[in-house]
Image 1 (cartoon, rainbow, N blue to C red):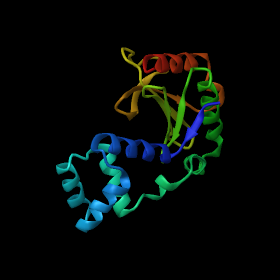
Image 2 (cartoon, one colour; image 1 turned 90 degrees about the vertical axis):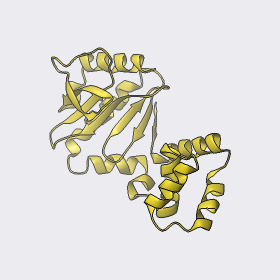
Image 3 (cartoon, rainbow, N blue to C red; image 1 turned 45 degrees about the horizontal axis):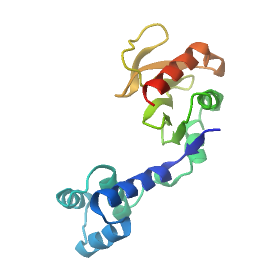
Image 4 (spheres, rainbow, N blue to C red; image 1 turned 180 degrees about the vertical axis):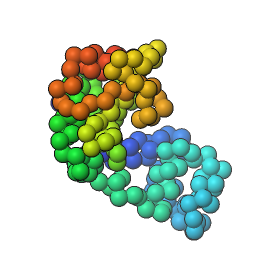
Length: 188
């Protein structure tokens, strides 16, 4: 069974990046920041940029100082439950897609506030997002594949060029499984 992760894995990755890029850990950076007594996020971000701390590592340090949003502190189960709270009939579609990804290879499933990402050892290859009360959209990171048939242009994320709308677990059929496999293979 594939592992389902929450934001803690992302936090750990950002902390690792900070250590690798600067040679200092989160606690050391927090002490440096506290001595400067930043009063707002913008000023802290400007200083961190001058210090060479950008991207995920910078966002981590900002949240360390000004607080983490509630969704970053929630468990994977709580994040997913919240996504489907007002549309429980769609939850079995997510469960079916999760089950289907078990046969693709090594997949990490990352629960986020509004979607679930499916990540190969290299990068995200698919995202599933509840879109309406009656449909979830499966965005696929596919190169060289144009919209057509069940594949429509994606609104999920810029790297996900196409998506498939799903209204029931039965729609996770052999065609969808083939597209998932291709997306995994291209991004592994």
